[in-house]
Image (cartoon, rainbow over all chains, first blue to last red; front, side, top):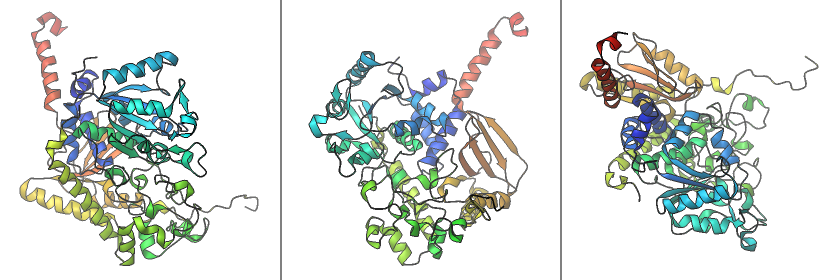
Length: 362
Length: 142
């Protein structure tokens, strides 16, 4: 493979027309909550980029995150983005096995030292020197420390690698920790969710390809483009919340009429994720549209925060000030939605105004 | 009916609810249309940018109606472009090869961007055409 080859050349080689690529970028811009004008700009930027090397390491996990991506509803988007990058190691998907696979990993890390993107799913157990989760006789802990050294950035896929997830739930027998507890000197992007929405992973990669840097993050290390708003803010049932119409049981008139599930324990008001807009299973639905409250699976310690069916107490709303304030002031949905739309614009304008940051890393 | 184990009733699917979010989208389209008519500068509204129920989308589609032009672009799945009853306001739907919608926009322009041929593709096409022209006459005619 010629390392100087750009993505544009690669696309032409694969017979992908610019129309197809523009369409791909339009869909990406939509997913990343960028204004529609960003699509053509992205198409221009990505085409001139070189293909980055990607190494994917699975640690203490259930493979649900990999399942989420490989079963994703937009196979063309995912396959196209993974064709644009060079996915050098992913032990679940790659054909090579055993010593051959480990040799590929070692070679990829050496060849692209300082430049590769490291994707991690799963938490890292610390007890007994990390003996609870090993690959080829090496602990996840040792492998992570080595792989992180040459990584331009680390993308944590799923709640486990982002925040510890279910392995870290009480009583945490393996002393599982997130990647950020082990690696302190590399940029880390958290893409939480149990599992995360597959297109969010694609979106982070697309951002890296487009702008040559990592997306803007919130205080918990999540890309604001996808985790900037709560499920509640973007929920199509939000108007019923504003009107005070709540389902009281899962089979009452309110539930059948699609009213707000707040009183049935929905964690939407304190959960930052994109389920309400991107949805799941071919864009069919998301938990609330299917009649069940949000579990809050993309938040730290979601498993240990009491019953999924206990309504949120007022005290739990601390992190969702905007929603709380809007509800208290009786502001209608229209205003809240307009505020959200304005923020999308602000973000793009800010990124567009900082072209100096768009140089590729390494 | 007495044998029914789960007497589920679906009197009103939640999806059939109008949320009131479609009207602001329509206002945004109206503003774009006005600007386009005055200055020629268009724009687009991403329908994923607002929380819309399926009923909201249907209402928008019905209100905008259908115009004179429609086109299908076969590029990594079918994309459809349909002019609405308001000239210059286009309903653009991008689908993947499985037929699933990957993006839906209302674009305000003389011609939606996806229709135009790109210079890069045109360059490759021109090269192929030139090769045919340069080929020996007998072969070219065969």
